[in-house]
Picture 1 (spheres, rainbow, N blue to C red):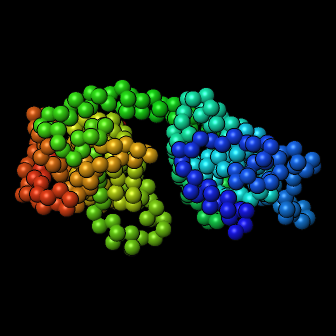
Picture 2: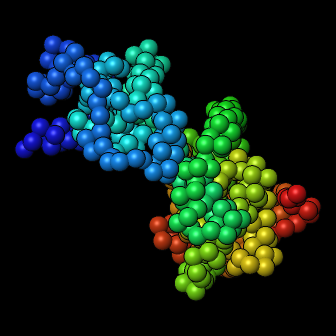
Picture 3: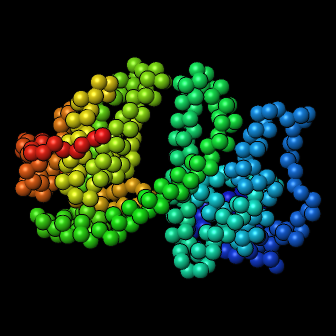
Length: 403
């Protein structure tokens, strides 16, 4: 087995809770104790690309190099061992963080990093060494950043490409090449809005998940006996699903552009309604959206608004909607627990254009004149046995008002 393969194997079985390993100058940086060179033994001359381009660079290549230098904070000049050493870490510990960020593996001789990479690595490590985060928490937080920003940039690139295709009348391939030249004018503004949004979302998240969490649990006590499957879970939420009817058959008959517009219209409409209703869109999976709200009434308003919006939409098909008020576990940006599973099961029972809730949720809403509950025939639901679904309809009031 080669040294690199052995390193991969050690890294893959290392416990996530082990402390970040400091670099050991006397034994090199190899966590396995091998005779890896220290930074002092590195060549004095700057590293160069092992496959330098021949001849003059094309305009596209020059534009890409300029954009990369701007985004990465400079030219790639450092190898992975040099970056780890600069942060005072073993290579094994550095790679834990890089993998959490979603970076690919690099070899010992790959010149893939800049000084900004070293500074970012040091920032995370300093939080652990100062006792502000455990290593496990640091890796989890780092992974959240990696996964969310990865999805974010894919979304943004595709949106920009689609806009160029539509507005400039070029092909998809041409738009993707032009993006390299057009993106520099957007970088600073996108970065500013990203940081602004993160701060606003963090503030809202603290309110939802910390300040008001106890009040939500107290509000969920009515009608419960304490032995429910979700009783140990820490948050009370209204959990809803909206599922487009006949999406699969529709998508088979659509070309790429039409399908993209349908998906975008679906997600945009869901995001707007859920946001206006004070809820949070947890995720979309093709033709289905998962959302939560802090109270059963807020969840009911969102659910009814979604069902009505898709019924009235001239392009999108109707949606089946279901909502359950109960307790959940929130982890990794997603939600888990019996409440989520029951809401998903109820969605499959709902008729197109309608909203179903369970009997516990109906009890929480029965004294609110904005809603009317219509009991349905009992159903045997996998994993839950016999349940009593209730159809939720609108009572007094106008519901959510969308601008």
